[in-house]
Amino acid sequence: MNSAKHLDKQEQRSLALWTADCAEHVLPFFEEKHPQDDRPRKAIEAARAWVRGEIACGAARAAARATGHAAGTAHMAGHARHAAAYAVKAATYAAVPTDAAAATATERDWQYRRLPEHLRPVVFPAGGDS
Image (cartoon, rainbow, N blue to C red):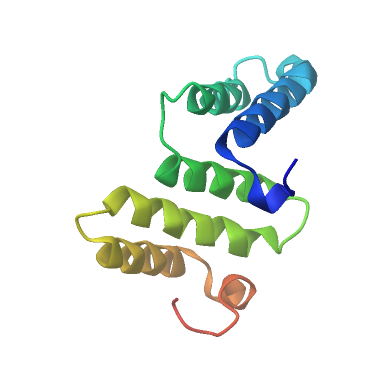
């Protein structure tokens, strides 16, 4: 088998199914506390839909990664930067082929303006809006 960085598509699909099974196995712990919140279950179903070829990766994958890092920010602030980066990727992928560059700039600007000024160095360490 290839290393994790060089999986072929079938290996990646198998791995996605396995991770969906792992997440679903422990999902009752979440659903017991939050029975009306179906977002984790929908995320698991999205992974399975990707395996079946029903949805494309691109923007959807980047959006899913952004949400994962958003949740991870509760654990560690460093995830915020990754959530923002994946949100930019999602907007960019969704705009292809029309105007990816404009979508990237628009998303980054939106993020920068919405983030409280005193927290900007956490997500944008260079001090800029990109």
